[in-house]
Length: 222
Image 1 (tube, rainbow, N blue to C red):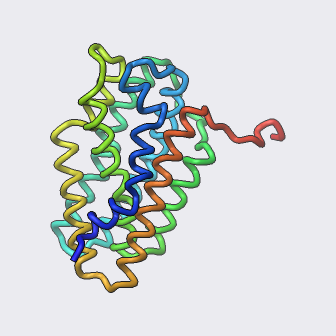
Image 2: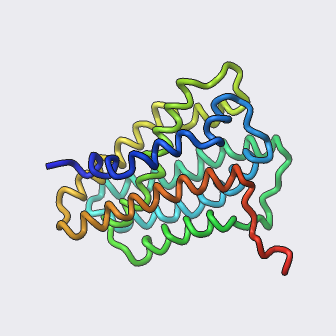
């Protein structure tokens, strides 16, 4: 039988290729991404990671074993302590103050999707929803590290997601998903696959929104 990850990757092949080919990621690898686009991404990703850590904490609550509970509590801590620390290094350098910052439409949609699943979904469905943020960043980080120009101004970002420590955490999350899917009913497995795909779609949208400097089109009416 095809494994859950093999099936999930097969149904998102074109979308994941499109993520690698986004202007944001190509220009980041070349070291020529405009600062305002990277700054937009960092601000929105900092907001996203706070919600993501909450979703991972809820995943730990729903976990079927103590070992998996510890695993996802540690992942939640990592999202706050390590990934956001990297972002703060950049944002402090840019002189950006996060106070009063609001999520973009795409960021709000993605985090609302995840947090709704955290509140109403099962361990299996929530795991499928948060997994692409692990897997996609491992893929993109590794791919960019292999082609990044020397003295890349985004090297700290690249090193964070290409690091062996991050890759190990991704493999652990993927192993948990394989275990959950192996015990799932056919209908639950289909639901997991659908949620995985939707999160991959949100990953594409998130980078695209940063490149477009997405803002609320209704701001002028406030």
